[in-house]
Every structure is written in structure tokens, then in C-alpha cells.
Image 1 (tube, rainbow, N blue to C red):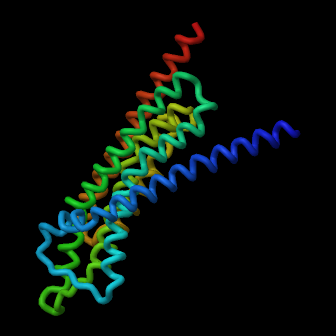
Image 2 (image 1 turned 30 degrees about the horizontal axis):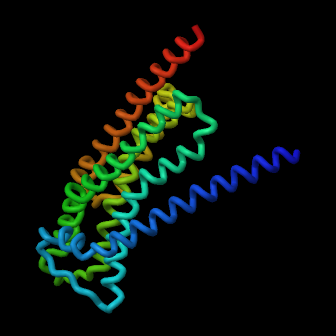
Image 3 (image 1 turned 120 degrees about the horizontal axis):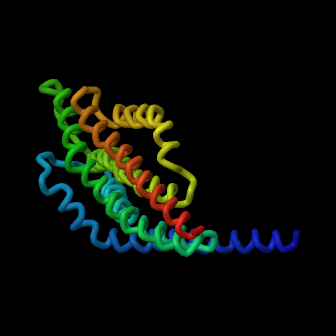
Length: 242
């Protein structure tokens, strides 16, 4: 009983250490991003045709914090993934350690790809659609805080949704998921992805299709990659037993 309590305390201490490193990394990246946030802001709005306004001195601080936070989140993802890997490392075999470690760069790359997809493709479609609803009836007036908050609500979900293939591959390599279970869950997964697409796009069929197709493609890629990882894992286990 005492050994079990000591092991629990050691695990909690290790978890606390990993969380502190992750939080410290995010804070450091947030500070660095905030230092260069003016350049980031200028790059984001360089192709914008609208003039943004602020209603108070604090608005621009919130805008800068939102932009810096996105950069900090992107930079923290591989660090957080590595810390999680270090935490579960003792429970993994030597082969599993090598396999799961290789997923860390992919997490960062897919997050950037997802944000880019949301920013360059989805955000202009949604924004232009909403502007078209106003027509000549209203004068368009945008505050910087609301404009960027709206933008983040559009692009950030795609950053995390694009992590799906790597997460599924990781869980498959650990034996938590397998392609056959994913195939059985396909109907429910499709429903969840379609609902997500409808919620983050304007109420127009074309926009929904533009978002749904990449999400369903991501899921099918995840199933395919899970199948590859699963069969490779089985072959290695058979070779090890023989």
C-alpha cells in the first residue's frame, strides 16, 4: 500500500513537472510573440480591404493578445506533445517510443496546415457571405477586437481538427484504437463532422460542402493511416514472437 502511494506521488510529481514546462513554454512564446505582434498584425491585415476601428485603448491590447496567443499555441503544440511523450515513455516499449516520437513534428505541421486552410479558404468565404447579407441596407463598421475574435473562432477549430490523423495513428500504435473500430464509428463520426461544418460556416450549401469534404477526407485518411499502423504493428509483434 505504501509503495502504491509512493508511486502515485511520483506520478503526480512527474505530471506536475510536465505541466509546468508546458505552461512555462506557452508563457515564454506568448511574450516573444507579443514583442513581434505588430509585424504579425501588419501581415494579417495587409490584404484586407476594410478599415478597422477600436472603441477604447484596451481593444488593441486584446487584439494583440489574440494574435500572440495563436502563435504561442502553435509553438507550444510540439513541446506539449513531447512532454506528454516523456510522461508516458516509461509505459511504452522501445519500439513504441520510436514510433510515437515521430508523430510530434506532424502535430505541429498539421496544426499550421489547418490554420492556413481556415484563414485562406474558409474565413474569406464566411466573411464575404456575411457582408453580402448587409447589402446596401447597413453601413459596415468593424472593430478590430470583434473582427479578430470572429477570425479566431473560424480558423482555430481547423487547426485542431487537422490533428485528427496523427492522433488516431498515435492511439492505434498504442492499441487504444484500431481501423475496424473506426469503420464501425464512421456513421457517427460523419454526423459529428457534418454538424461541426454546418456550425462554423454560413447557412449556405456551397460553404457547407467546401468544409465538409476536407473534414470527411481527413477522417478517411485517418482510417487508412490507422490500418497501415495496425497491420505494421501486427507484423512486428508476430516477428518478435517468432
